[in-house]
Image 1 (tube, rainbow, N blue to C red):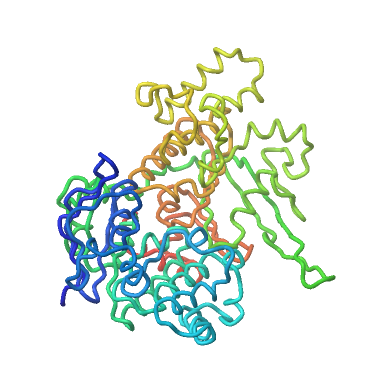
Image 2: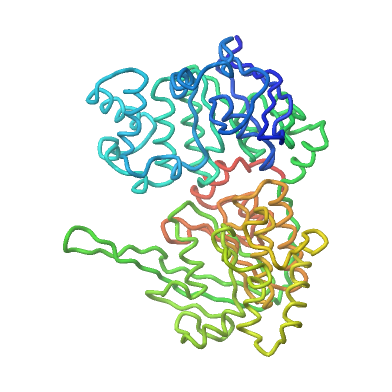
Length: 531
């Protein structure tokens, strides 16, 4: 195939700091090339340099598009390239789409800028593009603002923007990271179909090695700004040669679940748990939306119960009901013999010591105004006020060490604030905050979804070790079925607020009982994957 993009000995500096080192990479017309590596490896900054969007950086080498060196083009000339010859899909559409303009206007703007068509024609084509990318009721959705669309619809709108002028190269930067596996599969199938239709090439950036192996023709592996290995995707990611690539491949979740005693007692029970919300249906009328529909749940001591399902299936709402953070409209939740859903405020304070939670995004859930010592020690202040400051600090240091954070590793650890840590370190702090009061149940809501493969593996190993040493029961919510399979004793599958299937983890993956579960497993590409 003829060459489309040639990156030759590209180096990128910010001041005196070099973040990309002599990188060379070619993409042929119509080819899909993946770029994988951990956060900070230089993947995104390399992609942004193709479009000249790396502000404050010095670029050396050459980036040739059809033989034309883009690094030699002026800013005005690059504006003609962006969106027309080279387009980009960013990782998070909610922050990339303008919240003040409708999605139709944002797609139309690309056409009026690059193809000089009138507003009416641009709007008509914008609706056609939204329809082509699979958005239902495109004429109506074109008049919606980004916050009025679902995550999958926002990503489809962004794809419509990127493909409006039929670019020869599409850069997709983690385009499916925040999406459920079924929506992820739909978006990838759409990109595949549109790529064939338009004959465009694609640079696909991801930290999901399984996705890169299944979806791309060739792959490059980056470590600290250096391309350490490249070649056919199946070969590189199945039989890696470089130690760093081997480390990434070995970071896939591995099942290390210990069998439970046959007589393990039930610890938490939900019976006919039901959660309802009032939804406005016109100016005067309101209707009831059932978010969790009569769910029965039993969690035994030391067990991990995995809960999976698409966005809107009721997973997190159920978890909030178990934590008494969301009132029930019917049914009951018991922790041991004690009712959780009807507990008084005073009783809830005591219950918080027995059931804790780790949220998806530690950067949002950890207070930016408190130090690590204050964050981790807060539970002890509430539940063990008799402890002296010295004893509390000793307990905090011990718990942080148990989660893999010590003063030797991180100087000044106790006095630091959350923004001074990496994503994996912040999640360890969140786990330490929850575990320091020795809860019987820990709810884990997407605890590794934003982490790189190696960091994800470290956090999963940490959680497994803590469970085995403390006997804690986990309720694990995730859209990553590889994580669910690696960690869970049993799995509950939810759809539209109801439980459609519940079984032993191994049995569910080997013999899924419903079509919906089979679709989830197929979309995750785990039919034949390693356990």
